[in-house]
Length: 193
Image (cartoon, rainbow, N blue to C red):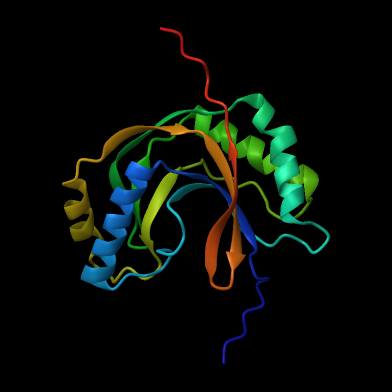
């Protein structure tokens, strides 16, 4: 019997996507489930991850994370308009909607992680790799050799959409599922025409 010594992850931070994009990506998840039996991650709401899953130490609560984001991130008005450009994959492991990377995403991720670490030192760490925002369709249980075919099918959707990055959401683990526990509104820049 394999014993897992990794502490149970309790939280992660992300951005929920708008309903229209969420419905499209849920259809893609259904396709992956019905065609290839994929289930991993399908119970998690469609999102872009800013801070990957971490274990919040017992000394801290979700309220501490909320306070950190409300005081350190939200006042900076870091909302922006992002763009999805079809689908891509990380090898055969993860199939996702390709969210176009950029300085706005990196700044939002960096400021969010910095606020969490300031409030709850040691609970997570900043990823040293360049930030690659994405909205996962399927991961971990994709059968070998099917990613290319699945990508061809999904890219026929020609998913190219702008969307507002207008929230930061704290996700909590409830049993074996991730739930959006708290969503805080991000201010979008004022556009004058």
